[in-house]
Image (cartoon, rainbow, N blue to C red; front, side, top):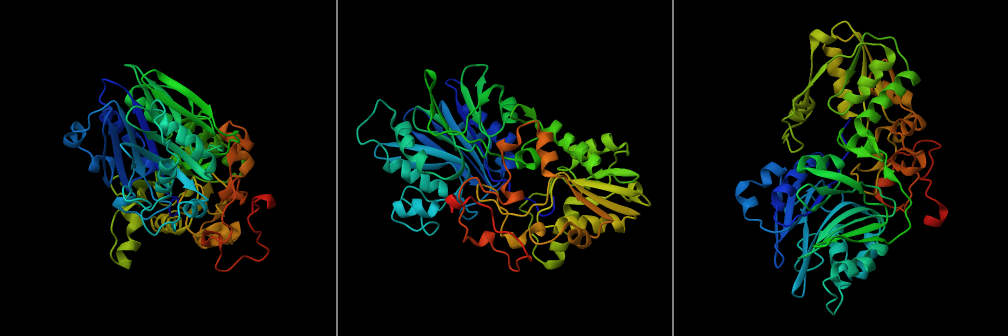
Length: 492
């Protein structure tokens, strides 16, 4: 993927008395590591105290047997973070903990709110400038939610149901994308926004207990069985009796992020009842039928382009082969202190195989192009390795609009396709031909209904009102005749 999309976050929750919940949360976060690599954290309750351990880095860097062994309890939530709101720093790592009198709760959030300014005004503060409360050392929209929940906390004890009662008041105030896992000393709660932009599933442990996870693949690693999705606009409460409440707090209007199928989710995850890997292969098959080309070999950009390249090869009859080798041990935090080293950054992650490439006409397949800088360098490497022709195929439409619901895509002026035609992009990349998968073919490949997806980043049609004066929407040099985002008039 050309200058990758931000992976936003992964959340995990487990209620399992007499089981090592901290270790289960660790395994769940490990399975969700692809959704966020900046920080990781786990909160555990033993019934009286909530303990939070979090730090910058990968799950395996933050946790070891020593600190996991110190986390005793029967409830745990975990979080992997990729920053979309709030800077990348320790104080913005999650879970967020908030004390309320003698009680307290912890919260993990996947997504991004669009009405943070209005929420901050309700709290009498400016967003992003300072922590919202002395017990919350964070500047994220998640911290705003924690403060709203604390202020909605019932003044009188309500049979231990204070957290869920406060949430019933707060959730309808939130706009944008969110999948939450929350816990107090005796309850685990999962909640999802009315559009269900980001996935959240419920699973059952063999040994007794319940699990929430951003993806169904995380259930497999902890030995849990998929029960069902948390529905858009739903809150599920788990306690010692099991699943005690299933509350529909808003009318659902499903709009799962289409890029969960294209890029974000693990290939072994299931969405809308369909396996992601199979859907990606079907995208490649559809792309081969839409944009055929005479070539000698189909080459994926690893790892994201592999399933679509397999599908393209199968449908086209062109042999599938390896032309690029990926170094799996170069992370996002690789430091490039000079311009020369930054230029070498792509080779730190990908390197061509000249003996497989030289003299061949290649079809190179990837899932998307965002800024295009990485893609352009990959094409240059393939040319230098002796490729006779390079035909680039993308298993999604042009990425033209920024996301406000949980993906970090920067400003619209940074998106390659925002103000360039496909022909102009082809010239910029230096390829012999270029084709993007049409959106109707893409949604058909998922096996789900087209209207059940958010496609704002591809179409500019935002299901939830977005801040139209936000710098993310502005182009430094607007394209002639370019349309403004087609947010419905009543949503502006």
